Length: 257
Image 1 (cartoon, rainbow, N blue to C red):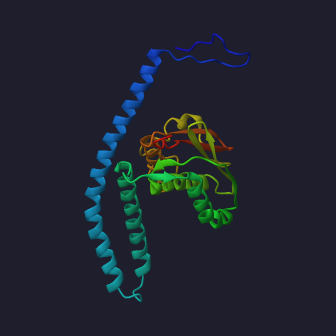
Image 2 (image 1 turned 120 degrees about the vertical axis):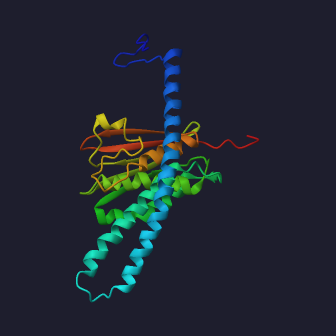
């Protein structure tokens, strides 16, 4: 139910009643159950593929060793096989990442420390792609999180931004504190996402990339991991202008404070 009473000129004041809140909660829990079921399925598929893949990889490595390099067509035949095995292995890793619950080992982490490390790591790659990185990192509180998980989340969003700017552009990485939240923004000036796809981008196995260039699990993993630490992720996008992801990370509550 939407109530426009009390709205300022040019603005809408939305008041959500109890029934609407209940429906939103049901939708949230339904999505969580769906993700849990898909996680179990993904884990099963990954483990079923993992063992046969190990046998195939071993056979490939034997072929590389026993077939002389002088044999005509050797590289043309073996190179695609090795690449295919690598792609399957990557898919298996993604499936396991999606299925894996949040790691138990958590610590107090300053998100800006991780962001600075990743910016230093990705600077050369960005320059090669013709992408300028704009950094706005303010002072923020620590959050309670698994450091490696948070690093993977940031890296996933940065990689997506790079992929959205094949002809160069600008990458914005910012962090600021808003009340009890640390808000991290990763924005690009890339291709953007059509509005009809926005609601689907966090669904498992959904991808806007060409076939063979993505599993459709990256953003689903990010979404799940952020939810598991009590945060949320928002996205704004305009086709041909760019996309902005905003991560809301809960500030750690320290005993005695």
